[in-house]
Length: 317
Image (cartoon, rainbow, N blue to C red):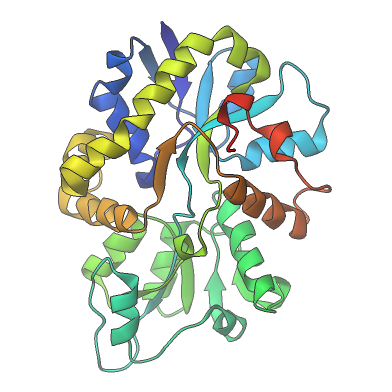
C-alpha cells in the first residue's frame, strides 16, 4: 500500500508525524508513505480536491470551515486520527524586575520566580502581537479572552507580521507580549531576557492536528489509513520509553536549521505539556472548544457538528 501524505507546513509540534516516518512505524504496518511538502499552510486542501494526494495533516479548523461553507459530498473534507490535542502556542514577554526566571520547561516554576505576575486580562493594556501565519491560535486565544470578560477587539494588537518579526520587535522593545510556537520559544529563552507568561496548552483539549482526507478517500484508502492509524498509535509508547531527547535526535534531519539542543528543549516543553495524544479518536471536548472559538469569533456562521466533520472511525464514545 502506498499513501501520498502531504505535510501542512514544517513545524516542531508535528514531530510525531516525522518520528513515525523515520522510525519505520508506517513500514511496520505494511504501508509505504510518500511524504510531500506543501507550498503553504492549508495548501494540501487543494491537492486533495485534485486527487494529487491521499491525505494531509493539519487543523480540523479547515474541515469545519469547509462544512460551514459547502454542502457535504463524497469530496468533502473529513478529519480522523488525533495527534496534537492541545494548543502548541505560548505568550512571551521580556523579563521584568531584578529576579530572572528559570528557563525550566515547567511553566509553574517560571511563574513562581517572576518579578511580576501576568494574567491574560493584562493584554488589554499591552502592545501585543498575535500569530498571522495561521488562523487557529488567535481564534483560540480570543475565546480565552472572552471567557474572562475581555473583548479581543479592544487589544492594541499587531496582526500582520511573522512570528520572527514579532520576536525581533519584542527584543527591540517595540512590543510587550507576543504569541509564538516552538522553536521561537526555546530560541528566545536561550539567548535573551525573555520569559514564558502563558501556555495555551493549559486550556486543555483543543482539536489542533489530525489527518485530513475526503469521505471518498476514506473509502478508497481504508486499508492504508488503518495502517497509518496503527503506526501513529505506536508513537506514544515509543516516546514514553525513549523520551524527548531521543525524539529530537530521531527527527533532527527534518529540522536542519534548528540545533539539537534547541530542538530537545522544544520537544521537552511540548512533551511536558502533554500536547500529543496520537490516537484513533478525536476528542469531542477538543472539537467543541475549537468550533466554539471559530463561531464566537465570526470565522464560521453556524455551529459545527462533530459528526459532520469527523470520520465515524474516529468518533469518541
